[in-house]
Length: 521
Image 1 (cartoon, rainbow, N blue to C red):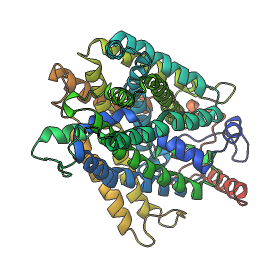
Image 2: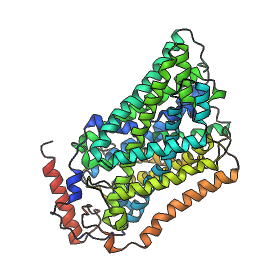
Image 3: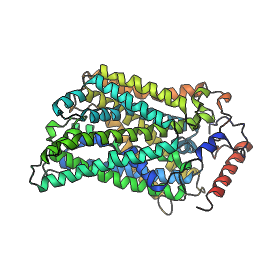
Image 4: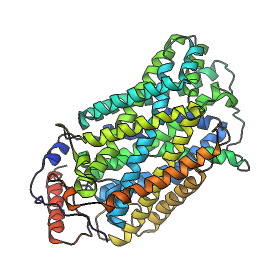
């Protein structure tokens, strides 16, 4: 197995980083809301509303072959390594070595960086509908330069909030998740039910087929993006050391969040399809248009701006969760000697400031793609697809690692375990997740015909070039890695396969400290 540089810090020495990390603890409800906010974005509903009744099939299919396997595997892995930080880096690295682990956490960080402009585009559209002239609002929402300004404003606000530490992130995420995601989703469903009860005409054919028409390959291509809707449930594994009694509370938060997530997506998509004809659906604007149509039907036009503000606040909360999550994971990995010292700088709150600044610079550059893409909608879709591709590679590694660890770490306690005995259930769950991710990965390279993408060459160049570039970059970084990159404040717990005495002593000390800390939980 490959090894990492050893830390010069004695195992028993408390560090500044450790002190900061132990300052705030997350409860089950807070973590569940953070999971929902990280996973659920109502911006994705229009993409599936085009499929009418069959949209539920896509949601349920993706939940079975992706969301549930991700949730189960992440719960086992996080409970298996409750005191070892690193998230995907830890899980993949324990199985396949530190280089593969670094690739996994790198891809998770990079895809979240690329994802920011897409979700923030939805936030910009929400803010555009604050006005009462909805024709003008719609034109403003499709304006590229307006979108760039708002995208960057919301992102940098989220970044500066993240600089204040995990306590602020948890509070804003919880409030924003409730106000900007859960309540609007509930309201959208209620509006659909009330509208139909009042005799409103449904734009969705409720007698349509639940099973989609697989002879139309375009349906499958666009539907592949639904896997991204469910991505992120494992991200809270990065915060495993900040959770009260993680071996028990982490699985509870994951499963509670998964159930709410599926309900929000299925019912919310149906409610949107009721009020907007499939031919008029726009991936960027239709959620706000749907709310506006409902409010007009109820003679409550004044309430549309309130919903728009709430949705924008929800976007801020979701972005905040992702700004703080993957960047914290790659920061911990960087301190262990995988990134130059520049990326290890923190502020007084112990937050990874330079990583956040680099991430912000990348988001700013990506946002300028608005200028070269034919429309806001096409920009939205191509970045979404690149995000899906990169994240799915990390998931493929995660599923493979979970199966491999059943054999390489047989005797390691698993407080949460997939299947009571043997490895059959892990093969089933992990295998389904791996094959489902592989299927979505292949389909995500194909451009959807429903959206004008301009030149097909641009589409394939961005996707193939982006995937190749971001896979190669972490290995280039590792090629130039130096022992001096290990931070003096590094408290990274060694991998189980690192057999040198210093690593084993540090691993034992970390385990004993964790047991003592949680013995009363």
